[in-house]
Length: 88
Image: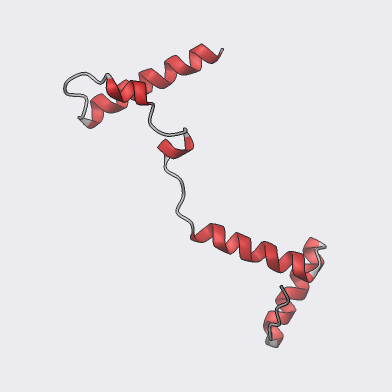
């Protein structure tokens, strides 16, 4: 999609420096900058999301009192350690 943008002289200078530093053409650089900015606006995934979500079988079998933070952390740590050992 064609796009025309008017740049002031300072922004044009910045663009020229970025082009020289990256070796990209204008279109590729501007697409990359837009994608980078869009990624910055997205919320970072939580640790749980990074790990692939809650382990359903683990959550279904939690013992009484496991809702307390310290207990939850200990149980989750034990579960993750067991998974790591299974992979070895």
